[in-house]
Length: 158
Ligand code: MG
Image 1: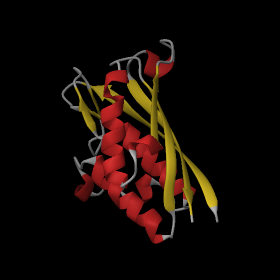
Image 2 (image 1 turned 180 degrees about the horizontal axis):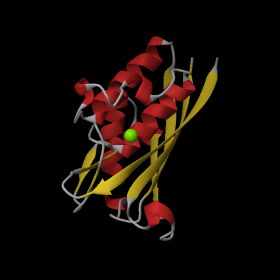
Image 3 (image 1 turned 90 degrees about the vertical axis):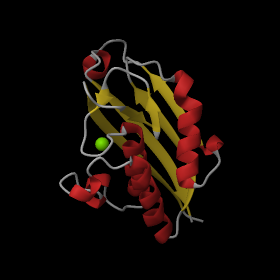
Protein backbone atom coordinates (compact mmCIF):
# COMPACT_ATOMS: atom_id res chain seq x y z
CA UNK A 1 0.00 0.00 0.00
CA UNK A 2 1.19 3.49 -0.83
CA UNK A 3 0.25 6.26 1.63
CA UNK A 4 0.78 9.88 0.68
CA UNK A 5 0.34 13.20 2.44
CA UNK A 6 -0.46 16.59 0.95
CA UNK A 7 -0.81 20.11 2.29
CA UNK A 8 -2.67 23.12 0.98
CA UNK A 9 -2.83 26.78 1.93
CA UNK A 10 -5.07 29.58 0.69
CA UNK A 11 -5.95 33.18 1.51
CA UNK A 12 -8.75 35.43 0.32
CA UNK A 13 -9.47 39.07 1.11
CA UNK A 14 -12.69 40.05 2.95
CA UNK A 15 -14.70 42.72 1.15
CA UNK A 16 -18.14 44.35 1.08
CA UNK A 17 -20.78 43.12 -1.31
CA UNK A 18 -19.87 39.42 -1.45
CA UNK A 19 -21.42 36.34 0.17
CA UNK A 20 -19.18 34.46 2.60
CA UNK A 21 -18.69 30.84 1.51
CA UNK A 22 -16.48 28.53 3.53
CA UNK A 23 -16.33 24.76 3.54
CA UNK A 24 -19.15 24.69 1.02
CA UNK A 25 -21.48 26.56 3.39
CA UNK A 26 -22.93 30.08 3.14
CA UNK A 27 -22.10 31.82 6.43
CA UNK A 28 -24.06 34.91 7.50
CA UNK A 29 -21.63 37.85 7.76
CA UNK A 30 -21.55 41.46 6.54
CA UNK A 31 -18.41 40.78 4.42
CA UNK A 32 -17.51 38.05 1.95
CA UNK A 33 -14.35 36.66 0.39
CA UNK A 34 -13.16 38.17 -2.89
CA UNK A 35 -12.17 35.89 -5.76
CA UNK A 36 -12.83 34.76 -9.33
CA UNK A 37 -14.84 31.78 -8.03
CA UNK A 38 -17.00 31.84 -4.89
CA UNK A 39 -13.62 32.28 -3.10
CA UNK A 40 -14.23 29.37 -0.72
CA UNK A 41 -10.83 29.51 0.97
CA UNK A 42 -11.42 26.24 2.85
CA UNK A 43 -12.27 24.18 -0.23
CA UNK A 44 -9.38 25.75 -2.15
CA UNK A 45 -6.87 24.75 0.54
CA UNK A 46 -8.42 21.26 0.59
CA UNK A 47 -8.22 20.90 -3.22
CA UNK A 48 -4.56 21.98 -3.15
CA UNK A 49 -3.79 19.43 -0.42
CA UNK A 50 -5.44 16.65 -2.47
CA UNK A 51 -3.65 17.68 -5.67
CA UNK A 52 -0.38 17.97 -3.76
CA UNK A 53 -0.71 14.49 -2.27
CA UNK A 54 -1.14 13.05 -5.78
CA UNK A 55 1.59 15.32 -7.28
CA UNK A 56 -1.01 16.81 -9.62
CA UNK A 57 0.22 20.44 -9.47
CA UNK A 58 -2.20 22.97 -7.91
CA UNK A 59 -5.68 24.42 -8.10
CA UNK A 60 -4.58 27.36 -10.28
CA UNK A 61 -3.12 24.92 -12.81
CA UNK A 62 -6.40 23.00 -13.20
CA UNK A 63 -8.88 25.84 -12.63
CA UNK A 64 -7.17 29.10 -13.71
CA UNK A 65 -8.71 32.36 -12.50
CA UNK A 66 -8.33 33.73 -16.03
CA UNK A 67 -10.82 31.15 -17.37
CA UNK A 68 -14.39 32.50 -17.68
CA UNK A 69 -15.72 28.94 -17.08
CA UNK A 70 -14.73 29.31 -13.43
CA UNK A 71 -16.13 32.81 -12.86
CA UNK A 72 -18.38 32.71 -9.80
CA UNK A 73 -18.23 28.91 -9.73
CA UNK A 74 -19.32 26.95 -6.66
CA UNK A 75 -16.02 25.58 -5.32
CA UNK A 76 -17.81 22.33 -4.39
CA UNK A 77 -17.68 21.60 -8.14
CA UNK A 78 -13.91 22.16 -8.06
CA UNK A 79 -13.62 19.75 -5.13
CA UNK A 80 -15.65 17.08 -6.95
CA UNK A 81 -13.43 17.48 -10.04
CA UNK A 82 -10.28 17.39 -7.88
CA UNK A 83 -11.46 14.12 -6.32
CA UNK A 84 -12.01 12.74 -9.83
CA UNK A 85 -8.43 13.65 -10.80
CA UNK A 86 -7.04 12.02 -7.66
CA UNK A 87 -9.16 8.88 -8.17
CA UNK A 88 -8.00 8.72 -11.80
CA UNK A 89 -4.46 8.28 -10.45
CA UNK A 90 -5.72 5.33 -8.40
CA UNK A 91 -5.84 7.01 -4.98
CA UNK A 92 -8.51 6.74 -2.29
CA UNK A 93 -9.09 9.55 0.17
CA UNK A 94 -8.11 8.81 3.75
CA UNK A 95 -8.71 11.87 5.92
CA UNK A 96 -8.33 15.63 5.99
CA UNK A 97 -7.45 18.01 8.78
CA UNK A 98 -8.22 21.67 8.10
CA UNK A 99 -7.44 24.81 10.11
CA UNK A 100 -9.20 28.10 9.36
CA UNK A 101 -7.64 31.35 10.63
CA UNK A 102 -10.29 34.07 11.04
CA UNK A 103 -10.86 36.75 13.64
CA UNK A 104 -14.56 37.00 12.69
CA UNK A 105 -17.15 35.58 12.25
CA UNK A 106 -17.29 32.86 14.87
CA UNK A 107 -17.09 29.61 12.91
CA UNK A 108 -17.65 26.90 15.53
CA UNK A 109 -21.46 26.77 14.99
CA UNK A 110 -20.90 26.15 11.25
CA UNK A 111 -18.30 23.39 11.46
CA UNK A 112 -20.70 20.39 11.41
CA UNK A 113 -22.40 21.77 8.27
CA UNK A 114 -19.00 22.29 6.60
CA UNK A 115 -17.94 18.73 7.47
CA UNK A 116 -21.18 17.42 5.99
CA UNK A 117 -20.91 19.52 2.81
CA UNK A 118 -17.32 18.42 2.22
CA UNK A 119 -18.09 14.76 2.98
CA UNK A 120 -20.96 14.86 0.47
CA UNK A 121 -18.61 16.18 -2.26
CA UNK A 122 -15.91 13.67 -1.43
CA UNK A 123 -18.17 10.66 -0.87
CA UNK A 124 -16.72 10.02 2.59
CA UNK A 125 -17.83 9.95 6.19
CA UNK A 126 -17.96 13.42 7.84
CA UNK A 127 -15.72 11.92 10.52
CA UNK A 128 -12.89 11.82 7.96
CA UNK A 129 -13.00 15.62 7.63
CA UNK A 130 -11.70 17.53 10.64
CA UNK A 131 -12.19 21.30 10.65
CA UNK A 132 -10.66 23.54 13.28
CA UNK A 133 -11.07 27.30 13.65
CA UNK A 134 -8.63 29.65 15.30
CA UNK A 135 -8.01 33.37 15.55
CA UNK A 136 -4.52 34.78 15.20
CA UNK A 137 -4.87 36.86 18.39
CA UNK A 138 -5.59 40.03 16.36
CA UNK A 139 -2.16 39.74 14.71
CA UNK A 140 -1.51 40.04 10.97
CA UNK A 141 -4.04 40.33 8.13
CA UNK A 142 -6.31 37.66 9.56
CA UNK A 143 -6.20 39.29 12.98
CA UNK A 144 -7.11 42.68 11.50
CA UNK A 145 -10.06 41.05 9.71
CA UNK A 146 -8.67 41.90 6.26
CA UNK A 147 -8.82 38.31 5.07
CA UNK A 148 -9.19 34.65 5.98
CA UNK A 149 -6.57 31.92 5.62
CA UNK A 150 -6.99 28.14 5.57
CA UNK A 151 -4.55 25.26 5.84
CA UNK A 152 -5.38 21.67 4.90
CA UNK A 153 -3.50 18.43 5.31
CA UNK A 154 -4.76 15.25 3.67
CA UNK A 155 -3.82 11.61 3.47
CA UNK A 156 -4.52 9.52 0.38
CA UNK A 157 -3.66 5.88 -0.31
CA UNK A 158 -3.61 3.20 -2.96
MG1 MG B 1 -8.36 30.51 -3.54
